[in-house]
Structures are given as C-alpha cells and as structure tokens.
Length: 100
Image (cartoon, rainbow, N blue to C red; front, side):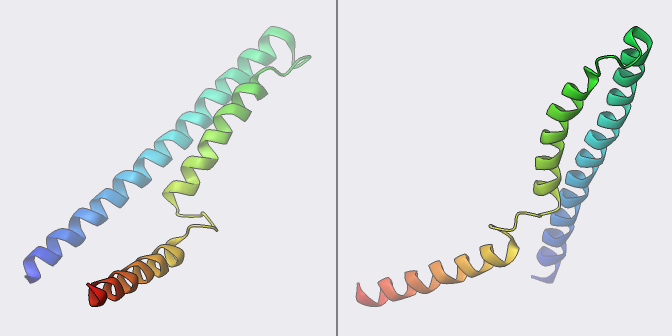
C-alpha cells in the first residue's frame, strides 16, 4: 500500500513538473517571438505603427489563461472550492444511500 502511495505521489509530482515546464516554455517563446516582432516592427517603420502589440495582446491573453490553469489562480473555482464540493457531493450521496 505504501509503495502505491509513493508511486501515486511521484506521478502527480511529475505531472505538475510537466505542467510547469510547458508554461515556462510558452512564456519563453512569447518573450522571444514578441521581441523579434518588435525588432522587425522597429526596422520596418520605426514604431510609427506598433503592429507587434496586436500579436503580444492576443498571445498574452492565452498566456494569462495558461498561467491561471498552471498556478491554480482561479478565485471562483480554486482548490478549496473543489474540496468543499467533493465533500458536499459525498455527503449527499451518503444521504441518498440511506433512503434506498
């Protein structure tokens, strides 16, 4: 039993590390690509129209949602909410079993 628990904890930790790696790879790509686009924008028109900001804004929205998912920053459905709901549903299930 203890070995299964260690394996389970290891798998959860590995999944968490993979999730973090994906986020940081996305962040690094964002920084590099937007920087290159900004340089191209500067070389082509000297920032008279900063079109690279459209790409930065669009990708930035996706990056924010990725961060919310990765770091569990959702204030409405956070870990505490999830645990409370699980307990609530388990208690409801116990009550319905008593009546059957």
